[in-house]
Image 1 (spheres, rainbow, N blue to C red):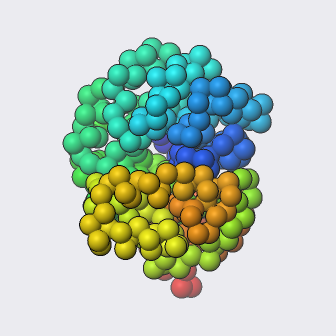
Image 2: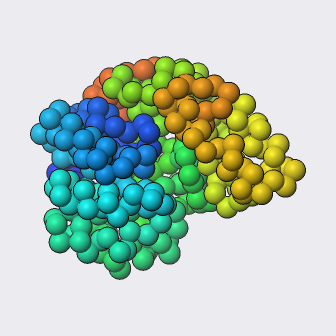
Length: 316
């Protein structure tokens, strides 16, 4: 496939793997890149030396382009921003803030910069700062979310900026890719679907929850403090919900959530872990190799497009 986004990324498919903190390591990123997408190492839980090691590991596993996601709220952000330049990473995605102070240095180093946005205003600002594309992420996504849904956000961002728009949030198969392409997206970012991949190194308890997840099994907590997060429902989400109903402060909520993502990913702690996943987890029924996931998604997309966008082929 040749699209504007594949030309920017140097990939076969217009697909970026989500930068999921504690989840997206060199193994997952290399698998996605080898399968034709853009694998992404999530630096949100790393210091500079850990990130450097993961970049070099990924480079030993693939000769294809891959990227790094930098969560801008990380205290290590200045050091991480320097590491991606030193290691000549081809693509950087960002989240949780504005990468404005780093974009010029990244661009001067030949790095493609693709921030995650949740509004047209932020998309417009990223374009003015020189971003190569934006990832418009709807509230169906797992983890930290905005308020607009993918269906409403994508066409508005597409109409606002001239750079390519990558759709994220609620995309796990070819139907999702076809839907957002009709809304004007140049490609997709996929996160939750890769949680249930063979190459993803999360705890087996986490994978099992994703596979068993029903359409009604995700919960959003943290809205009262202005930091909404979508996870699979669990004892932790129930405790958070109860505390929010009682009017708990942000500091009180933060006390029980610090380290909860690590407890989910590394320890598989079903009581205290924060099992971040998007609403689309209800469609994930099997653990598959990354290559099979990606090729299956785009084969389904091609079948739909060949029918003029119709889903009739599923009935025949």
